[in-house]
Image (cartoon, rainbow, N blue to C red; front, side, top):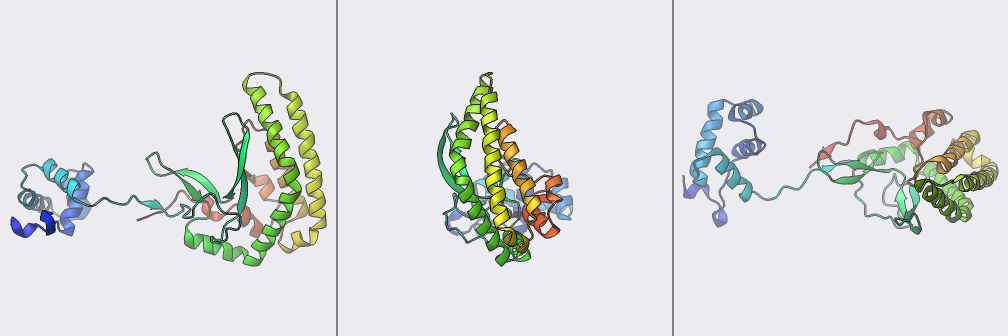
Length: 289
């Protein structure tokens, strides 16, 4: 069998069945366990190993597994289906993903000082990949087909109108952002060293109340648009005040808009789907190769 088992460049050829057996053996399975997995007899597994011993000119099971692992081409790691495939941070005019929901983020240094602003997506959350130490940007909507279905279910026209409202809201909040972050960081610094942060907390509460009033004015002016896209005005006010209260009270600058069940219930079912995509309720990401 010597020369007949070799391919180009002296690389040993392995049949598909032998590759399956070697793959399972490399994970530590015994011959009987391999036979059970592949629904073949124990003797068939041994016969394949005997042929592999002659092919690789080794005398042990561990030796042939090691030789095969050195020979086989590297395997591309499995990628989660819900991993965002786009380069980040996103450009300001990004429109390639149908489910993209722009979110402006403030980057900070280790002293909580603002460094700059970048664009991310509201749908992205960090998730650990299996048992290894790799983290990736998981899209709560799901994979490519899920993102298309999500956008189609809400409607491109409605999503565009929501984006228009978001841009108007960003104009209202822009004058407050830098000062809010500066006082929030100062509040956290005082808390960290055990000093009284009540003055910063008082300032934050007053500032967020002024900001909430500005946003309420915007919502009143855009009442017709809110009705058109199924966003009740009172539900939006509750959502915004809950978010601003979290900004004041949470012991971190890692701020995410998390819509609670209580607030979510104020919105109609089609907009509940917008705030909490169904894919977010899945047990975990599917893996594709």
